[in-house]
Image (cartoon, rainbow, N blue to C red; front, side, top):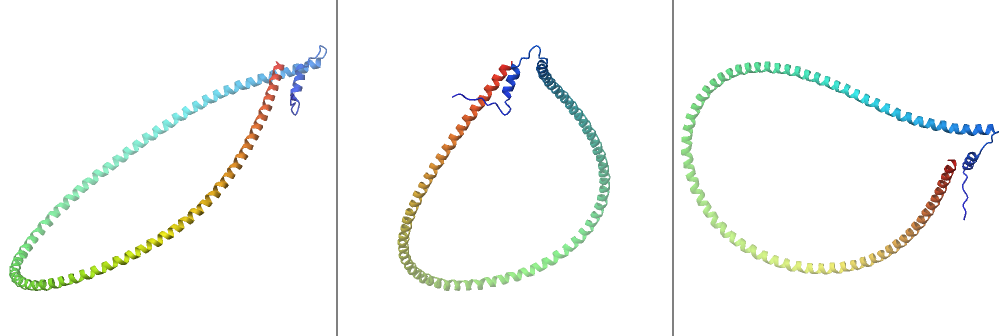
Amino acid sequence: MATTKDPGIYNFNQIMDEFYKFKPGEDDAEGRSYKLGVAGDMLSKGFDSSLSESMAYTQQGISSELMTQQANLEKRNQSDSRKEEFDYGMQSMGAQFDHQNNFANSQYDRDVGMLAATGEQDRKNITATGVENRLGEITKGEQSRANIGAQGQQDRENISTQQIMQGAREKANIGAQGTQDRESIRTQQAAQGARETQNIRTQGDQDRASIQTQQSSQGERERGNISTQGDQDRQSIGAQGEQDRLKIGAQGDDNRQTLDKEDELTAKKSSRQSARSRSLARAF
């Protein structure tokens, strides 16, 4: 099936073909002038385009050199500025160090003098205090020795009497307490054994009854849960299968429409490209 070439909204291809095929006669000065004018205009525009492109590259090179020179100048200015700031900073720190060092030296001299005066006074105070303390300690020592001797004699006598009486009381208490403890232990052991035996029997009966009740209730619940879960799983599988079939059908339609549109666009593009190629071939 033959295809009709799209002439375009202004039929530009046909107009261009007719213009290139037009050959004015020798007596058609107006036709020759118009065609030569068009050719001269095309030549002038081509020259202008080439010249503009060359000027653009030249301007780009000049701009690049200017930017490089500006960057170098900026770098030098910043370097000089930082160098001056560094020198000023070092001089300032040197002056500050000298002032601080002089102040520290002066303060050291003042501190040494103060310490010397304070040490002399402290030594005098310590000497006087030591004499007073020694006299006081001597007096205290003599009084303490006298008191310790008298108190020691009295303490020894009191301790001896208390130990004899305490020993007699502890022996009597130990004998009575032993008899009472043995009787209490026998009574408690008998009662405890009877209570534990009864508790074991009662707890065993309760445990057996509870286990039977729990097993019966658990089995009934598990059977109900299994039946309900099976119904839900079957319904979910059926609904998911239907949804998957619908998605697959819709996706297939979208893919076919996309491929048809791509084929149509490719055919139109190839047709336009072929027409332009033939037009350019006829022009030359």
